[in-house]
Length: 299
Image 1 (spheres, rainbow, N blue to C red):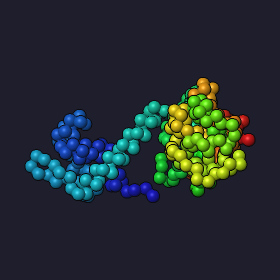
Image 2: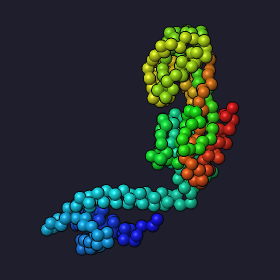
Image 3: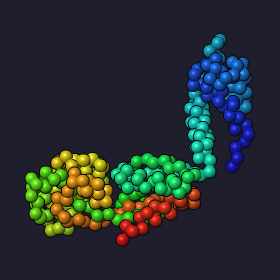
């Protein structure tokens, strides 16, 4: 329902009020807006008359926000910031749109980032903003259009497309492998095992799959693959890492397979988006592109 006109003041009235509220001075607001003091005073008075509420206490040559004016100033400041950001985004990208995408840190830096230039070249009107998320979140509370998700195909109020599966391998430094002389899966129980908080049972699953007692598996905890892989390269232990995300380290020898026993993860990577954003053109373009990029890895 459209608000009555009296509750939609013009931007120049709101800008004058916000500047005076922020600076605490009509003089400073006038200087900032390149107006005269009397012009700013008239605009603030016009705003007060339009909404029917006094916004400032006027004491001789000074002004002080009323209680209601203080609350109104904060809300108007946020609204003006949103309008300014929207205008800036439109100016920077007048022929496309913006995709706000939540990514997993290592997947984003190792896999997605190197491929994004090809997408942006094919879609020059689209801007992608990236934000890091390592756990579930509520699309209703986060200003994102979509997310790269690792897990099972479960996300309420959202749609998703499978991107790819993954295989993890036990990886460590060459020195650690030489120190322990791993010959079988059982030997890994003698070495420090590095764990990810987002996959707390990964080692138990790997050990059980390879016929090894999985009780009382302990070790250092990490919240991201990047730090776990760095710890493994430093010789702190053996980490279960997605093979496709550590290709460079394996190729250079900074990481080696402690033993060549890969395991297919039970979870997969998905592109997830809230139902109401399904028709967002930048999302549609990105979805079509990333599904093509990952089509050979969905087996």
